[in-house]
Length: 257
Ligand code: GLP
Image (cartoon, rainbow, N blue to C red; front, side, top):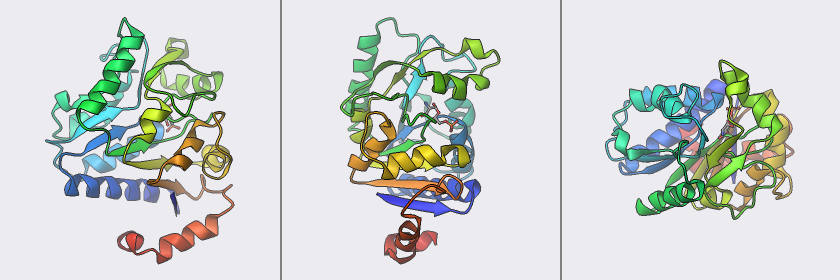
């Protein structure tokens, strides 16, 4: 795992956008796994500003609220269209999210997994982290072997995400999410986390024990992960100095120093 600490959120976003931009330039038919949340808004703006060619890119989002139609302003489909897809040249048919209105939830999970397999898997999965440690909506207790399925959301997730709804009571209490097993099959993971409120949970995820209580800790099992943090989010890390040293001496990071 590579942990890169930038001095502020804007610099962290800039680096994440550069890494993703470079992957798309080198692999024009890349399959990208995408995340939502406040942290990603600035990243999507930075990616859109790069004028990359998305004609052959496919995307799969991590999750979608159950019961929200694509036109609903609080759906993740709406979020993705307005924050990214409407600003780049990706064919909408290449963009995938779970269908929050699917009548048969088990079948929807299986359909999504099959769609990911059909394009040959996810090349680069973007992740944030929730305050309760979730990646996607894999709430505490999620199996590291889990696949795309419906999941009940925690009270903490409700408190974190419901202010984004006009009426907080409209936030669904369940969502479809890729499983942790699904996420770990991506060829590369880029996690972006910023802000003081994430300092405790990201330290647990990166440096704490592997535990279903912190789904984000599952990334420790993946052989190709870059975690990009700002100083605020990195505040509770034990190996901060070492991560900095790696960034300064490893040739791979030279172009970004
Ligand atoms: C939601 C998403 C997660 C994301 C999290 C972070 O809960 N399901 O994938 O990591 O938001 O949100 P924020 O960036 O708003 O802190």
